[in-house]
Amino acid sequence: MSVRQHWRLTVAAAVAVAAVTGCGSGDTETAAPSNGDSTATRVFSADNGDITIPVGPERVVATGYAVPVLIEADAALVGISTWKRGLAMMTEQDRATYDRLPKVAGEAAAETNYEAIAAAKPDLIVIGVPKPVLGDIDMKRLESIAPVVAIGPTVPDAWRELSRRQSDAAGRTEHFQAAKDAYEKRSGELKAKYGTALASLKFGHVGAYGDISKGTFQREFAKAWGTNIAQDAGVTYYGEVKEKAGGGRDVSEYPALEELPESLGEADAITYTVQPDGTPAEAVKQVLDSALWKNLPAVKAGRVFPLQYTEAATYESAIKTLDSIDKALAPLLTR
Image 1: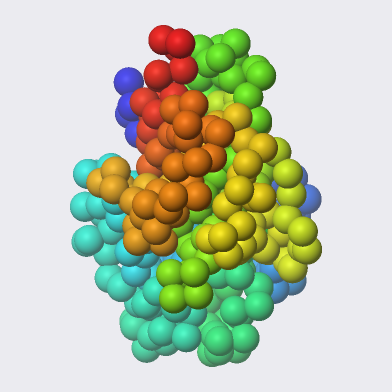
Image 2: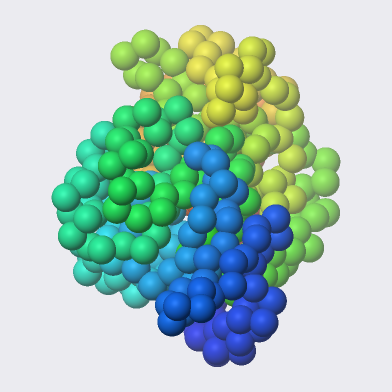
């Protein structure tokens, strides 16, 4: 049974429970007014402050990282931003929903169409962009349309908590929990399957965002985009960045290609990011084609593993990442 099917079987009961239990932890709910308006509200803690929002929003606009989360959660969406980076990770059903919904913003926060958002008549707007980028958005203009909650990314592995909060804001906590449970079941299976094979191995990871023009590659450490889901499957990544610079820079760095031996020479095994079709992007290909790469101990030992869908930022899409990890690590079981 798929996660989505499980959601549909449980949602009716879950909604009944939600009606009794009310708000999420840390929120306060306001009783329905006595003037005949049946809309209940609660105070939600967001990046932009404590915001009064509907308990059960019926017309939601989502942007940025909130788009895939709320599509998967079957939120009552009436408009979204584009989210091209996540299309390959969507199920057919979610892609159909994505294609159908009006696009009220582009990939960048500055590409927000305020007129289109107003025309969608939302009762809640969920902004899923990093806090520093909020300066590119006219928040006062958005707030004149509907309550706005900003719940944006911080460090890469924070997608778990962010997706929970985004689902909560949209009144879809039950859907979120079903997806989380399915993910944890699958990651637990992989931990059990590969536990012995992985126990003695120190991993490194090559990410997809090196700069070819500068001759650099991306080394990702634990809790980065390329590593955090593999960690849930039992993979251990060693080392840390030389200098933390906030956000993703706390868990990844960009050495020169000539530093490959220094950066990854201690690795017993190496994973590297590939595109959804299984091929490496040019920034990764330059590493794989390097003579320095071919002389690394892990490469000589044949312990290099390509990972797809490493940009997953929802539990449902991250199951595809786990499936890729399972396929990549399978050779370890035959040694």
